[in-house]
Length: 307
Image (cartoon, rainbow, N blue to C red; front, side):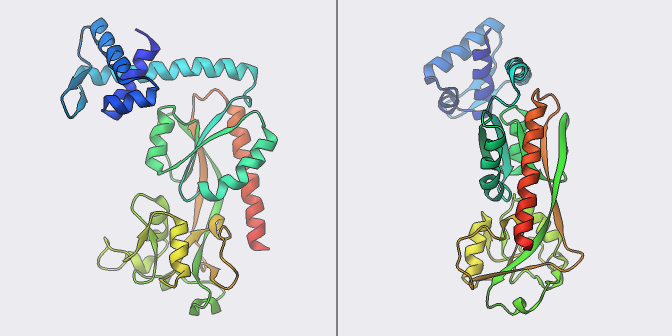
C-alpha cells in the first residue's frame, strides 16, 4: 500500500470517473486502474463497484476512502511541518475566496502580500462558500475568505472587517437626488440580484424587507446574474438597480456620468468578511501575514471610497 494508491482511490471517489481521476492525478487511465486494482487485491475487498456508466463506492469502500483521505492529510502535514520548520513564509499558500470578494480583493492583496512575503506565492481560487468549505476541509486549500456566519468542525475563523452595502443605479436615476437610499424602496421589480448559491444574494434579500414580504418568495426578480460585474453592466444599460458590497463600488471601467452609487440608509446593512483555516494547519505565521495584508488592503480601499 502506497500513498500514491491512496491518492488514486480518493480522487476516483471524488470524480466517480476513471478518466477524470487519472487526469487529476497526472497519470494515464490504465495506470490509475491498475493501481486501484492492486490496492483492492492487497486489501482483499472491492473498494469500487464498476459499471459501463458509473463508478461507485462500495459500503466498505466508503470507510476505506475516508481513512485514506485522513492518511493523505497527515502525510501532507509531515511535509508542511518540515517546511514550516525552515520558514513558514517560504512556500505557496493556497487561498480561496467567494465570488463577491475575490475579484475586488486580490488585485490589491497580491502585490501587497508579494512585497511582504516574496517567497510565499498564492495559489488562488474563487468559488461558492460550500465548495470552498469542502476544499478547505479536504486540504485542497489552506485558507478561505468568506462572509460570516461560517462554522465547521476543526476550522478556525477570524473576522477581518465589516463591509457596508451600497445601492448601484444609472447616473440619471431619480434616486441620485437622495443622499441615502431607504432599503424599503428596493423591490422585486427593480432589484437585480446574483443567482442562487451566492451568499451575498441572501444577505441583500435580508436587507430588503419589501422584497422579502412579497407574496412569491421564489421570484425576487425577473433578472439574475452570475457575477456582480454582469449586474453592473445591466444597471448601466438602465435595466434596474442593484446592491454592491463596498469593495466593488469603484472597481469598474465606466466613464463618469454612467453609474451612481449611494449608501443605504441607517441602519445600514453590512457583511462581516472573515478568514477561515484548519486548526491543524502548521503555518500560523502565513495565516497571520495573510490576515494582516487583507485588513490593510481593505482599510486603504475604504479610505478611497470615503474620500
